[in-house]
Image (cartoon, rainbow, N blue to C red):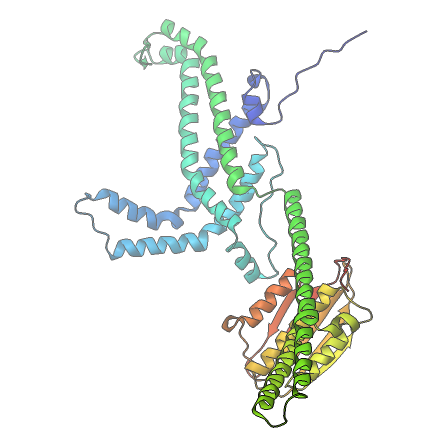
Length: 461
């Protein structure tokens, strides 16, 4: 039997290479040195480019440091300088940090393994959409923080590398330096070189200094990579996709739980409290048969029976508001027609639904129309309203479109009440969208789109 020799595998990360004794025999030392030199150059370039951004704060800080602490006063110029510096950072720093972040993610490939996702959201079309998205997301301001952190970090890397590189040059070229400059003195503390012969041992020491340089560059590059990954790299797309799937599933479970609890309350009211009130009303009617008509007791029983009738009516309206029976039995078009019949404002309903929809979609659409018509009656002077419901096919599934239009004065503002806000939140739970158009003078139009792609078994229907 012949056994092959297993060759040690080259580490695929810088931190793994640093932990192995064969670090100097891999390409990682030179990749780390290249990255560290690039860090120094990029940091210098950033300091020059961003000088106008941080110069107001630098001048205020220099003024504060140059004066004795016991006589220092923060006056109007210092406050103005701080405010101007804050304005420069908020407005202009992202414009430098965004391309810097892209460049640093490319340089990370030298010393680290991917993926290197930027973590930014996809902006809407147009310049304003890009500005609104980029200036309000945390990924942008993490890149700004990295930009200001890179400047002192690059100075530190430059000082360490230049010091070690100078030590390598001095030790390797010590005899030549002493030959060309006989009066020169190389003082290393414990060892002083004044002649060519004394410089020969330093040549033998120079490989050790090179080793220190390579290890130092590896440690610096690894530390820089940790900081860069923490501030510049977003979560992997697979992780984001898994989180989105979990959010979607949990949202579906919440909708199912809400539907189940709502229908339980509806059954309890309809089959419990309402039936008991009806029985009480019948008992009161039977009690009147034993009383003298027009007597005080008869009048009290009549008053109690009238209150029971009013309570039954109110309870029926409450049950209808939770989930009308006609919605379960006959579907959304019939339920919207009944809702229009009970509306104080004349309502025209037009529906174009070729089939029954999932119960959670029908319930949300009914709630939207009911809340919209309630707002029309309470908050507007509209003489009429229109409800249009249709089903639009699409590549990802059908979409239910609900439009409620009232011919009132307009000027609806979601910030002035909780009705429209609650409506938007309930639609968002279903994965839908809501658009509100209410210019001064009217009309007010609410357009809601609800996806019908979630197919869940409904045991209650």
